[in-house]
Image (cartoon, rainbow, N blue to C red; front, side, top):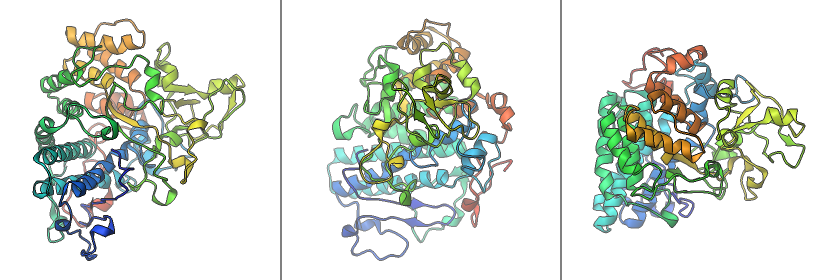
Length: 506
């Protein structure tokens, strides 16, 4: 979303624990609103411009995937078998360390994973209620509503797959409401709402977007999300049908214009944004001038994965070594993954072997906590990407995050087809052929292995292991407990004074 153009903050926050609704907008529009702890939405959402400003704000929480120290990607990478937490020490980030060693508890669980997505829910709820009364064309109303419902579905999807039974809120919460006693709904009810939102939204979304509209939801992106939701519900036939619409002929160009790029490594070139393989991509920029005072609070627009995964104390000694920025050394690659990737053409684009560079006299670095010498290369920052604009350079990397891409949906469709049949084979073959690999017989294990290789470090592996039921076997040595760690603890601050019940085992 090009919210850098419209520097207006629509910050509606729903805190289930405290019940506080706080919406801050440009004060030019709020001269008649008193500071009563609640935003009088009757004085906004009056026309297309105001609704669009609010829609920009509703998109903001998607930056949770790569924005701030508590971003989704490095957090869930750390909990998987592919990475360690890393960082400066065993106490560098209680949340990320706690997920990595499965000592996470309600007090160390970062509250932002709950609050940020409920903030997104709150913003979309208000939009969905207010858009029908706004002065604008029916076509724009339908599109804005469809985008809002798709965003609400996305935010609830993240909440339900992280926390399980959660409060299901689909209307604006006002200061007079009894917000302390909103009960949790079963995960099945949350998934039903997600499905309903996406099914209602898809017909009113554009087939494609271009220019300044890139980053907004399209029909293809909403279908891909719906297919993913169905897959997590184990509704495989429904998932396969949605993915087939998105994917088209394996290896070809789909009805939405999606096509695998020919060069896998090009996906991770910072300036190579919105390729034909990108289905839903989160925009990051160095023009937001992000700084420490508001980093990770929803107002910064940089990609934080970059600085977090870069090796500490890195200095290149020869001109043929990568000119990498010295960073914080989170998410060092596990030796297990490094060995698994031997001989795969995607290795170098995915993993930077700094240990080998040091042994060859090409670079030096400072081994940090849980160091393996291997680092996530897909988001590795280089010196030429350091911003010269105001704001802390560490917080203003501009690499986009691709939440869903075509190789991902190919493999999810093959999985939804139970890893059998000619179409599942063709989908798997297309992903492998793109990097020059020969066909292997399709099976569920082949699909699992291909997802691990193709999607290294993109934040999917932990959820894949949980969905497949493989987490206890793969993560048991880390401390993963079956029947407990498939979902996260609800942060303690969100339970206080409410009727919410903590998840089992926490």
